[in-house]
Image (cartoon, rainbow, N blue to C red):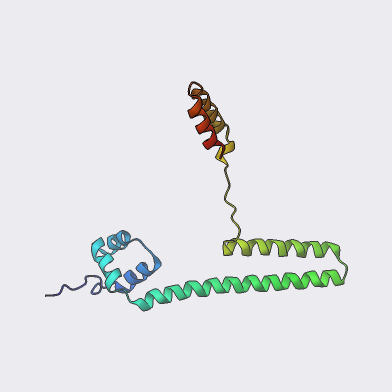
Length: 156
């Protein structure tokens, strides 16, 4: 006899499905609704309506497109202000419009992933590495061939 899915027959199935689509961890859903984690996992894999997953993806795309459209609208307005400021020979307003356009371009690059602001650390220039490298080369002084080989590798 086939086993009945405890999530499909649960009184809060709609809430459980919504939580799964939203990415809530299976364990949390199971705890909140008195289910086993395995039951929630099986339900998600075998019974979660594809239309819900597709709808969630479409909503995320719609929100992203809305943000992009708002960004384009702001860019167009800033360019219009810049054009008008140049025509009126208002240097102060023109500079403010240029600054706004610059910030909009930067924001757009961040949103699209084209601008990486993570710090870059060059460990080859760190004092700790320079000290270790020096000690390593000094320790190899009694072994000239090994010292030359290690120095060649470290120089790369």
